[in-house]
Amino acid sequence: MKKRLLLLALALLLCIGSAVAQTEDTQFALFKRTIAPVMRWGENGIMTVPKATTLGRANFFAGAMGQKAGTLQGLDLYLTSVSLMAGTSDDVEIGYTRRQLIWEDLYFSNLSMDTFHMKARFLNLTDYFIPQAALGINAVSLRDNKFTDRNSILFNPYLAVTSTIPIFTTKMLFSVTAVAETIMNQNALGSYQFSGGADLNLFNFLYGFAEIQGFNPAATNSEVINAGAKLRLGFLSVGVGLFNIKLVKGEGATLVDQYASSILDLANANYMATVALDIRLGKKAPAKK
Image (tube, rainbow, N blue to C red; front, side, top):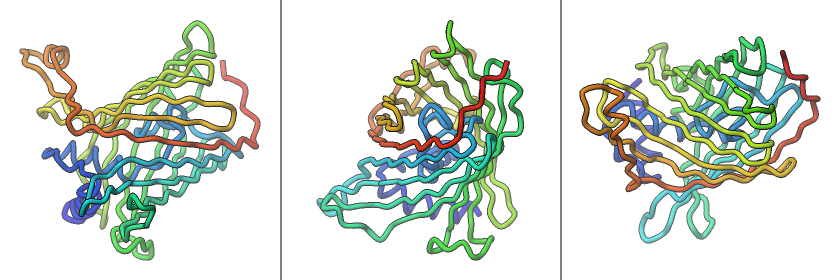
C-alpha cells in the first residue's frame, strides 16, 4: 500500500514542485492537499483540513481552485481542482472533485485525478462551545481513474472535531478543529496522522484561517502550515492562500520552548486561489442553545 501511495504522490507532487519534504508526516501533508476537495474555506473546512461542520440540508456548493505547479520544458504548469458538494441532510454531505494539470497555454495535460468524498456528523449537541464531531472519507483511484476494483482505490478516512466560539456576538465566530486520519488500501491501514487549525469568521463576510498538517511532536520539522483569507459576497466567495509553509522548530529543553522559538520557512511556499459558489435551497436551522 505504501508503495502505491508514494507512486501516486510522486506522480502528482513532482509536477507540483513540492516534493521536497523527506518525513512521512510531510509526505502525507502534501498528499492530503492533493486529494482534498475544494471546501467552503472557513466553513465546512479550514482550507484542506476538514471541519466537523457540514453544508446543511439541500445546500449545494461548487468551488474551483488553482495554483502554479512548476515549470516543465520551459512551460508553466497549473494544478486546477473543481469540486461539487451537496448536503443530503443537516449532518451529511457528499461530493466529487476533478483535478487536472493544465499548461500555461490552457492545453490539458494527460495527468488528472478524480476524488469522491463523504462526511457524516455524529455529534452535534449545540452550535457553540461544545465540540461537534464527524467521520469522513476521501476515495481516489490508483489505477486510471477507475473505481471498479476496491483494491485499486485508496481510502482516506478521518475523524474531525470542531468547536465554535462566539466573540461577543454570533456574527463573529472563532473556530478550532483537530483531525486524526490515515490511509487504507487492500484492507491495510497506514500510520495515523494529525492535523488541525483555526479560523475566524467576521460577519459572514471576511474569513481568516490557518492550519497545520503532519503534526508530530516527536518528529523534527515535520509540520506544514497553510494560511489564507476569504471574502464572501452573498452566494459568491473568493479566497487566496499560501501553502506549504515549513515550520522549523527552534532549540529548547521542552516542546513548548521549541515551538516558541520556531520560524517559518517560505522558500517552498506557493500561492493558491479559490472561487466558490453557494446554492442554498435549504433553510438554515436555528442555532442550538
